Length: 342
Image (tube, one colour):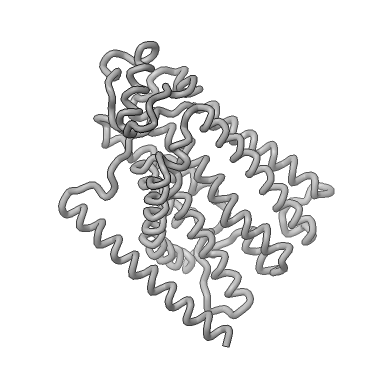
């Protein structure tokens, strides 16, 4: 009876996702035929972080992860397969703790430098719209990403340490940290790192909004100018640009400008570069880097247009959540379910 109900539930879920996916792609094709933008480009403040901040965050994560994980381990095992179940659980919580601390540090950095809107948007209404865009994007990307994964799986087996641990020891002690890591912590960490910090910085470098060596390395300094809350995002950006231009910008860029002025052809490079790095960091997980590269292209496009990480974060969490739910159902109720890449 349980399997029957789960079967009907999965059929309904798949049908709903397919329906929304087809509707979204029809809308995308209509925009392309009519030469209209799929999503309007939102104005955004100039990055107040630089290359050194990105390297610093990466180094901090590596050091904290090694420190926290080592607290639960004895000796120097060469792989997760050599750990006991308790050591694996401890190592996962150690890595989760390190990721949380790094994300908190990045969030504080962004807020202190006036980039809170890049995380949550301009208002609650904008946040709600971004969530809906994220859900629609999830449905649109889910189908092609799974199809790509299915094709790749015919040639290269997909591998992931978290999935292997879950299959070998499907106990609450393993399931809980795996779900926390895959559905919550990993998406937040990766969206902070790849979309907000890396891609956002690359976009401002390619468009010349960070034009000096100092700004490229450490970003714009200080907080954005305080302007009236009731102003539109374009007016806020204009006021900030005018005030900052007195000390740093040349005359020709002193006036208000859209988020990515006069160089739209260059905007593919930040998405492509961040997607390549995102995919390569999943090297060693079988064929996962290939579908994840195409996923990152979609996430990068949505972030570039909306200039808030909310939509891409929603997509990332939903995809990983779907993967974990399907995997758990497969473990406990049979082999008929196939999990897409985490």
